[in-house]
Length: 385
Image (cartoon, rainbow, N blue to C red):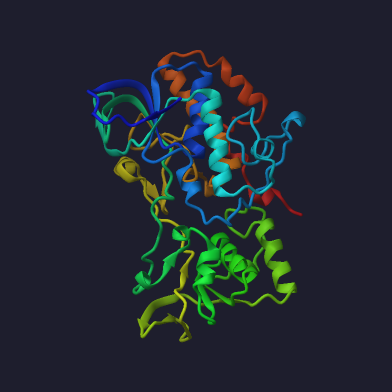
């Protein structure tokens, strides 16, 4: 069920669990709680279901492929439940952000999840043996909070002086519209990981010359973990573009120091002494800021990652759990959907145990390999060829 925020704030409400965020992580963990027959929980979303996906440039697509393989015991890589497949639902292999948001909304409606849209969590306080959430729709008290809000609402758009002259890739509605407004100068793309290379490839397909600036040059490296190197999908696209002599220049060892602007042109100044001057607004593919909004102070951090127990609970605040792309264990990032969905049942199992709820429905997640309790098996070095 999708419930719009009421015009008049509610009085205090008490629940067993609150999920903050209705993206892939929030919807996925919500389905697991629904399978446990929890009737005292809610999913609070400040915008709409799948909002961060709807903000993608319209040309941007998933780098992980979707394939309807459930009947053969293999989950679709982009599915958030045991019984759905974006490939089957959308009839496409690499969905756009808008298409994937439609899939998530379909999951919400199919499972009748208690999603409340337009509800912003303004603050989070620890109180007695639970939490108090001040929201734009009233006060909610909950024994458990599952933070699934992700970080994609906070673009890293101030990485260096003069970045205000640039535009972050997440703020581009359409690369076609951006390209149409460009002068006949190169477009500087700052950042050479997935979003930067995707932006560069799309712009070159639209006839624009692009220069990608990155200190490390990740396009040069191969590895088994797409969290650390370019995915095979992006590497293939890049290789084909270069073979076709598309106007794309890849510059490694180039850390941008600042961007100056004068008389309608932009000077992208790098620490290696090189400067790229262009009349086109530089594009920032610099990722997103770390942090967990109102929940941030209730987590300890280690090298930018929230410190978690083996049940994905805050090491600093009992009862507060994390699901989604910021989950990390033993140096392994669970930032792809096919990774972090493996932990939904782990969190739900812990919550159910403390509530005294029958956990038998979680057996299905074990049987379908979506219950990863031992993260030590996630070793990329195990892939040798």
